[in-house]
Length: 103
Image 1 (cartoon, rainbow, N blue to C red):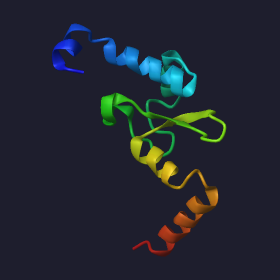
Image 2 (image 1 turned 90 degrees about the vertical axis):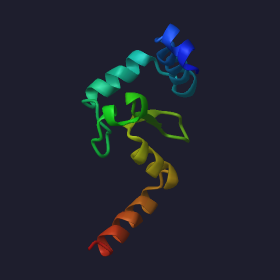
Image 3 (image 1 turned 60 degrees about the vertical axis):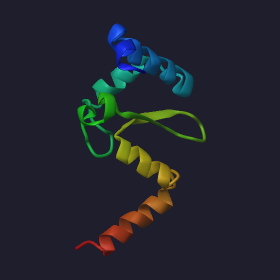
């Protein structure tokens, strides 16, 4: 969105995000805000505050098989889970690897 359009309608980014939440996750912006409040504004895994994330928002994490929303995560944690394909065995293997190679 160009700056002139954004300046003329400052609510536009929120409205677009509300549509995205509804379409991708079946949730309202109010539900997102409640999750954020319940998580004290921080990533459910590492505790990164939403204020340090792009647009001041955490990612909506969901189960790719069921579509069920789990929690809000920072971009790093969300991407990490995605790279491990939500596979607990692979994640546990990664933890063991890091423990073994910890300096």
